[in-house]
Image (cartoon, rainbow, N blue to C red; front, side):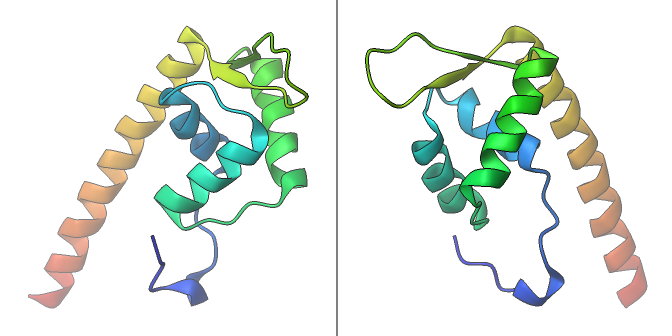
Length: 107
């Protein structure tokens, strides 16, 4: 996904992007970075991602998965899914309000 409004900067919350990525299934950091860039057009630096992973794990919204591999996968928890649903509902309200206001400004 290529952004057409690069000059606006990043209007994304990294935690939200991580939760959306993990809602599809467990992933390790490198795979999350690729997935997030693909669906959102946001290129995350590893340090940014791992800081968000640490905060999400502290909140109990994600958890590490046992793995024999060197890379540590994570999965979303039920409380993480609840938080994601709540945030997506808020974003829908913001989007709907924005669409109405932009249309009103063109009238």
